[in-house]
Amino acid sequence: MPAATLAPPARLTLQEGVARGYGAYSTLRKKIASGELPAERVGRRYVILETDLEAMVKPVVGRPTEHASVSAAIDRLVASAPRLSKEQRERLAGLLGGGAA
Image 1 (cartoon, rainbow, N blue to C red):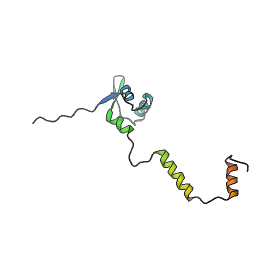
Image 2 (cartoon, rainbow, N blue to C red):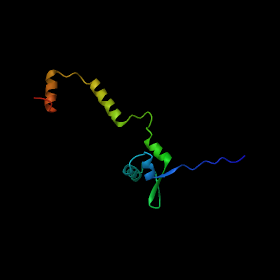
Image 3 (cartoon, one colour):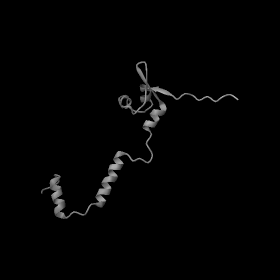
Image 4 (cartoon, rainbow, N blue to C red):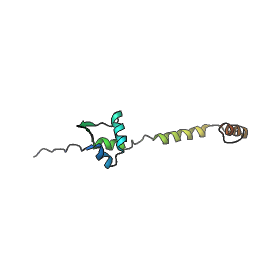
């Protein structure tokens, strides 16, 4: 019985990664420089495993986006805050530039 062989993972240049929609050239370079995206230098070019690019763009399940978590925190704060009197609302509006004090 012949041994099963696995194909090596696809390696892409930055230009190929951009062409396949994994991000802008400058974004990929920044992620490589910060260590967020592993890459190997071959000559003057970077090559990246396609699986690393896929992992970079795949959302993490169960972890809210920054916007969603901020919105949820605001909703919790508003729900737990006491009602303001008319005078308090007017004063707050004046402080925030939304009306006369």
